[in-house]
Length: 80
Image (cartoon, rainbow, N blue to C red; front, top):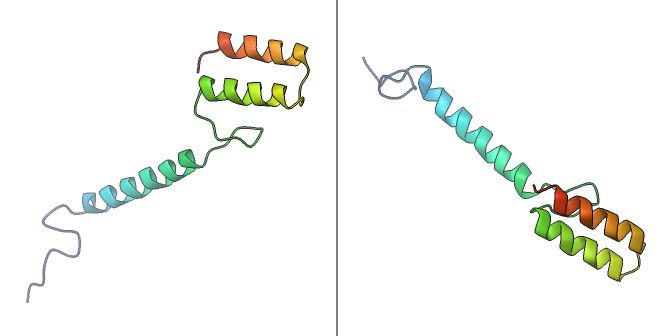
């Protein structure tokens, strides 16, 4: 008796397993990117968010004016 195509689908053979493996990898990658954080523990979305964080840290007094200006210049020169 013939009961299907060996569990791989309609003639796809071993390639039928590649698609689920690729999908699984893409899902894992997306989850890691979603929860990615920088060294300070903040979620990273680019230069604009980094500047906002820098401004907040300066306003709270966590960094000096010299550090603030230096980091701001570095962020503006290095577009991500």
